[in-house]
Amino acid sequence: MATSTGSLRRYALTRIALVIPMVLILLTLVFILMRVAPGDPIQAALGAKLSPAQLAEKRHAAGFDKPMLVQYGEYLRQVVTLNFGHAITDNQPITTILKINGAATLELTVAALFVALVIGVPVGLWAGRLRDGVFDGFGRLFGIITYAAPVFFVGLIFQLVFSKWLNVLPNSGQLNALDNALLPKHTHLSVVDAIWDGNGAAFTDAVKHLVMPAVTLGLLLCGVVIRLIRTNIIQTMKGDYVEAARARGVSEGKVVWRHAFRNALVPVVTVMGLQVALLLSGAVLTEETFNWPGIGNRLVYYLTNRDYVAVQGIITVFALAVVVISLIIDFVNAAIDPRVRY
Image (cartoon, rainbow, N blue to C red; front, side, top):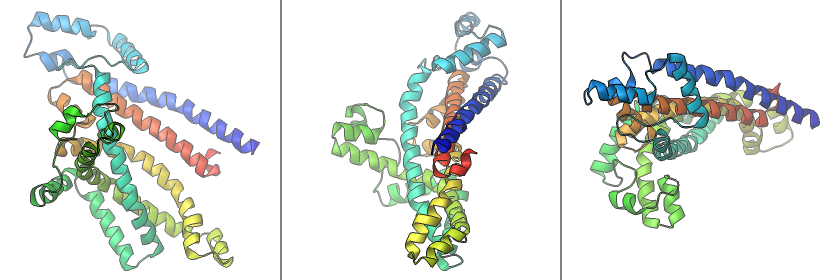
């Protein structure tokens, strides 16, 4: 036990140490890419609105007249202190944008992940268990279609069916105007805030607004989950330990759940962590389709207005989120499978 704990500790420290150069490379790429466009962010965002003297004043205040290395050092300091300055177009603090709109994206992403697991895990499990049967064919076809279908197209179909034709779900926004105005913003997560406030009507409204965007985004990941679960269940069911369990008289249900399923989870957890980037990119299109007030929606707004300061802050947080989640996934894998740490 002591040896296992020590190896896990060494593995964790090694992974954390490897994250540092990875983060530096990511931050450097973001910094460079945001400065590839001609001119500077002030000129790009406000060039048609301010006089040359006012542009020079804004440029000096933002530090864009300093040498590139000085700007890079200032950028790293902002990342470390989590202070990304203010957006040029609306003068909002980037941290406030990340806090408010990022909470909406977090709510949508968690709900979408829940949808993907609730649908993908049972379908993939039974498809692998009933290999080459009718259900297996249906599961594989369903996974291919959900993964290949464009997010915005699926969202528009859902809006047409459930909002326009059936009129059972709202087609946009996070809450209706009244609930959005009256509901206290404790966490900026509409479902959580409604529960916190004990507001049943607002909770129902928040869930209704969340259903279509979450299902749309969750289906994007559902195909990946089905394929992974199916493939790994088929492989693990061929293992010697599964045959040994069957020889001991263990029921088929327990063999699948207690033996095959747990061992099939290791590669699934790894890939699911990597799919966070897919969810974040899909969230941008989903938020635009459903007018969801998330960070992707704001990113499109700032890109349209060429506000590269705000874009830089948002992309930086996206990159850091992917790195942190990848690190967490590595730790979870090490906890599930002791072989991972060596």
